[in-house]
Amino acid sequence: MKHTVRAFSVGLLTSAVILFIIFYFVEDTVKSVEEIDVEEMIEHVESEGYAVLDQQEYISYSVQKKQEAENAETEKSDSPKNDTKDKSSKETKAESKQESQDKSKKETSDESDDSNEDSDDEIKEEDNKENVEKEPENNVVQYTLTISPGMASSDISALLAEQNIIDNASEFNSYLDEHEYSLHVQIGTFEVSNDMSFYEIAERIAR
Image: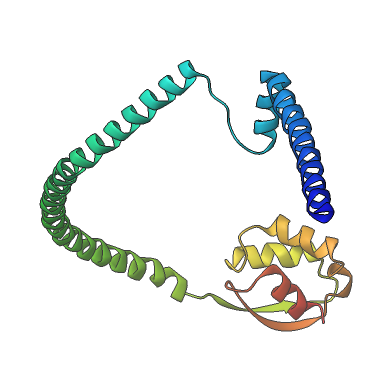
């Protein structure tokens, strides 16, 4: 009997302790939650990566999303119409471009025929001019120059100009003096022609 009463009293004591602990901690937890400020709660939620909206912001956000969805549906429905318009405009542009290309080809072919005729005439005229111009070039004047003792370079230049071997006696004489050919003029006979340069004539008579 004593053991039963003792066990019963121990059970009551244990139950009282458990109830006390539960009441104490649960009450403190409820109080701590109720005492938290709204701003602190918002900051805590936002720090966890969530966004906090009030009622007015939530309503405007919902309306905006609805409008965006309606606009997207409207654009999808209008896109086939725009595609058909673009295709028709592209086809029209392609046809007009092809027509303009055909016209330009015809015009260029006509112009090319005319230009070919003109070019043939010009070629003939140029050939005639070249033939006329080549005739004097073929008339090379040959002359046997005889240099006597005591003959000055100015006399040699004048003699060559008289025989149409050079065009200007003074220029040739100046050339001989500047390059010191006049000091080395040789006595004798030399074959010269009018197609020779000052350098070639000077090298021939001043060996």
